[in-house]
Length: 299
Image (cartoon, rainbow, N blue to C red; front, top):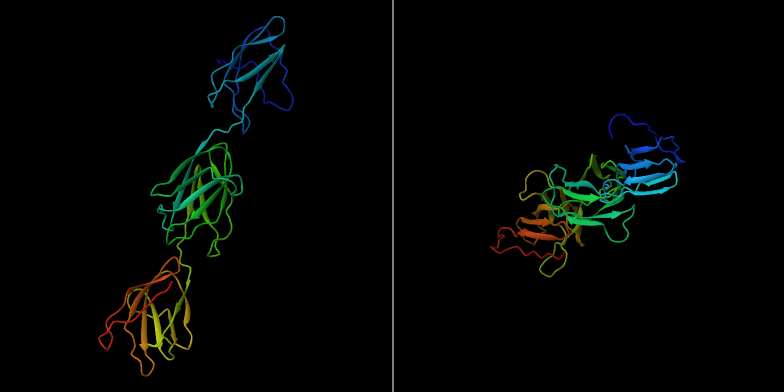
């Protein structure tokens, strides 16, 4: 294909008729319609009897397949194949600080629902994940988030024929009632897992040696491992256990005053875990009797 073409056109809904003198020509597809692969250059001959003969079917196409060309008298039919070649798409799973997060269990489903088996699945690491995906619609599904982070809801995206990616549905609101945070940049999609600081329901039971709830203990809960600043919760114990909503983290149980006839406990450090359980991390100093605090956790 040297010099200027003798004919050029954009295909339409009907075949194209040309008047060509007998001789050898090259059919060159400069650009294929979106969703189709262009054929490689095809050499053909217009014969003196008005028929056409393909003399060189061309190189293999982007799929590594031969062109599909059929002649019938003076007609030549050339087939553009579907462009389902994979594009390289990069997935970045980050925290609010922009750092890649490890341990997110991710699945990619073909189509706009998570039905059947995923076409790809992986556990996130310290670097973005590269996948080869054909053009089309997919769902990003986070099966499980790393500890301390909230998983995102399902996100629908489209791999375009030009190799870029577009989010078509950002998904439902997350467990915090907030929208997912998703950014695309060319062939890269960055999805942010937010910090899991949702409160968990924790129950405090203040009992005597007989196991009965005691009234009148003045209790304070401090965030962190020291009793500094203002307590995040405070109450006076009654005849039933006290339920609090506490975000995951470390706290100090401080008994400001015990009911008459009872010794107050020393400060006890505990941790609210992401699974909603509680762990005592420091049972505290010995009490006024020189004995250790008696603390039991259950869930």
